[in-house]
Length: 126
Image (cartoon, rainbow, N blue to C red; front, top):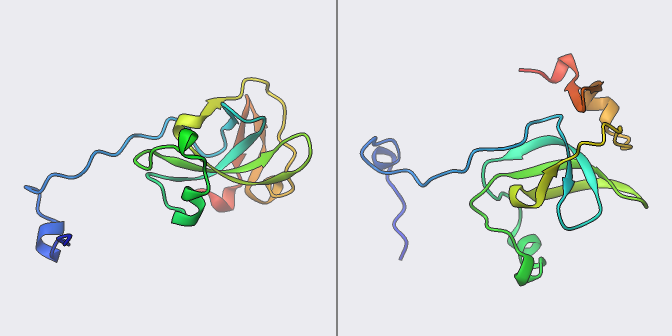
C-alpha cells in the first residue's frame, strides 16, 4: 500500500523532495526531434510527464522515454502536416536553421521569429 503524505508532511522541509530535472528549452524556442523528422515551437513545458498512461504505453518500449524529465508541448510540423506534439526533453535538440515553423496556431501565441526564437505575444506574457 502506498503512503500518501498528510498535509503536514507535504510541506515539511525535513521530507526530501524527489529530484526534478531542469528544463533545457524555453517557450518560443524552435527544436527538432532527435529521432523523427519533425520540428516545432515550444508553447508549454511540463516539469515531468503529464500525459495519459495510454499515450505513454503506445510508445514502443525500446524507445520509450523516462517520465522523470521535462516534457514539451510543440506546435509541430513535418513535410506532410502540422500538429501538436508532446515530446520528452531527451528527444529534443535545438533547431539552428533559423527557418520559420509553418503552423497555423503560431500567430495566436507568438509575435514573430527573432534570432531563431518566437516571442510570446504581449497578452500571453506573465
